[in-house]
Length: 184
Image (cartoon, rainbow, N blue to C red; front, side, top):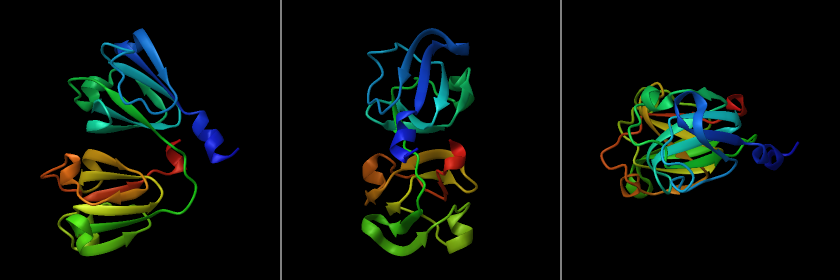
């Protein structure tokens, strides 16, 4: 099956109440504003694929990676107070992975090219901060703390010249992980 065929099968179901109760909304692609479908969201079930969910509309705010599984009360598990307001489907990708990270905004300062996961940019590269990047291949998760902990940000192919202009002012991105087909 082609990767686009696999992406067509991605599916997440959101529920207003805990334990998959109440009204539900099924989503198989990106949704920038879920408020017209559900008044609140306290549980979800990822039936196929992977998604990023956001606590603000238009893919803004805190982000959470959701892979196949059941999340009966993810609101308290992840510390989300306002609930999910938007979601983005992460397409399955089976190619090579390549991302350049930069110490400063606008691709300035030290630069390192990554092709695999990095649990600590400080330990591997002696780099204390990452403020811009260029994702050439693959889909990645960036974490604010080493060893894939803390808040996260989904990075798809493209140029990201300034994380602070994206609403992440003062954040430090200290570890990066590829989103591979093992998550699907």
